[in-house]
Amino acid sequence: MDERSALATLAATLPAAGDDAAVVDGLAVTTDMLHERSDFPTGTTRRTAGWRAVGASLSDLAAMGAEATCAVAVYAAPEFDEAELSAFVGGAVEVCELVGAEYVGGDLDEHTEFTTATTAVGRVDEAIYRDGATPGETVCVTGELGRTAAGLRRFATGDAESGNDLFQFTPRVAAGRALRGHASAMMDSSDGLARSLHQLAEASGCGFSIEWDRLPVHPAVDAVAEDETDRRECAAHVGEDFELVFTTPDPEAAIAAVEATGTAATAIGDVTGAGVTAGGEALPDRGYTHGDN
Amino acid sequence: MDERSALATLAATLPAAGDDAAVVDGLAVTTDMLHERSDFPTGTTRRTAGWRAVGASLSDLAAMGAEATCAVAVYAAPEFDEAELSAFVGGAVEVCELVGAEYVGGDLDEHTEFTTATTAVGRVDEAIYRDGATPGETVCVTGELGRTAAGLRRFATGDAESGNDLFQFTPRVAAGRALRGHASAMMDSSDGLARSLHQLAEASGCGFSIEWDRLPVHPAVDAVAEDETDRRECAAHVGEDFELVFTTPDPEAAIAAVEATGTAATAIGDVTGAGVTAGGEALPDRGYTHGDN
Image 1: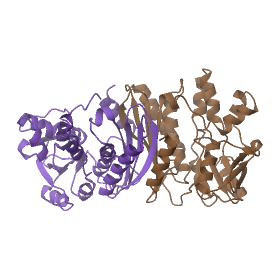
Image 2: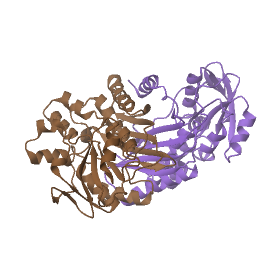
Image 3: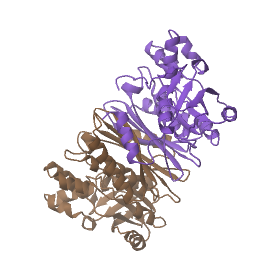
């Protein structure tokens, strides 16, 4: 059974699972595990790792329209170097502070590979799920796409400083909160825009038609992309940008609500009856495999 | 830096860390990572693993006097066998149901070693910390000690059925709730009674004097212990029994409150000014190293 089938099995067994975060008794809860080999390219600092691992969980709260109350992490490594551990915690604290959450520690574990398991918890009154999109609505994204793709290229060429900068993102908690009452369906783009659209389509029983020239591509992509095909790969398939992908019946109001939080939002296409297309052609349900995982 | 020093560093950096669970904004949150090699003896079923991993986090909530709202887990394994995954989830669901919590899924991850990272979240109005013990009070434990030690012996001799039975414990959430207003300090016995007493002593700035013949030893220990020395080792040092160790100025009332929840509680000694002794001799701050971790 592959990971996606296994996740589907879990979602069928556990009613609260299967969205970006589980919602139970007024709380949103989400957990993730990241590894050195698959998630942290050579040159990633422990500060970036802490930021990014905790940020990924905070992004899942954002995708539900939840507040971010707190986060914890398990830090598992072959040894506990005080500077590395402090840097990890520093990154975790900083990303939490950006979204009004408190980083409250966690657990340490001896492990052959640097691995971290993060959990974020937030209160949620009116959760936004993946299954509410309706044909005729508009699909939008927050921020810009391709930031992580650009970061990966920077790490690959040895420019770790730029890579680390690009890897430290702001979870869209404020935007997610602002979208309550505006977004009909939402998730984050952690698996890439293409996969996110396919997952929203499957959950909502709809399709999407997006236009390539409407995608807000991060300026760092232009500096690394070989050509337009590569640029699209960076924006739509590489993923882990942790932007919000959402549908709305009133894009003008929704975009204004997001912009009021200081984050951009862009309409990229329409909700259709079935199929996911970009520029009129099928957009494959394909992400990017990071490292060997 | 060893794990204990690193944990101390973390606790100094993060005000909410350093107890069984972090308390923030009316919520108690705790996370743990367990490994096949170090935490699950050969013969441990995935159902027991799910039960025990999630139960360990629920026990941390119990130790704060918190309710148990929900739990999540990352299930990391070399492959996702549907029967194994379902068994893990089944164990997790069952232990949650025992304490009124909901198991809401989590994340899957490919990993060379079966590893699980669990997080439990609960509401807490009046948290019980480790630092409130005062000389002259009484120290008590819930349930019986040595259950895990007996289980380990059963696994070691190939009696996996008994081992699995002994490894499936009830987190003391109800007892922990009942101790609000009674317990002055509390933690769980996951590192063993001896280490728990040393940790409570350090946090509270006190000592403990306990009596060996007052320890409530699990009957399964008598079937496996070689002699009285070994019996004490099982009861005080092996740990991972997930009972509550607490101090109280009024042991009669505290024990009655716990017993009203259907769990036994026993006074095992006194809170003193300094030093941790058992039967008048120093009780070493020593646990048991499981497996190779």
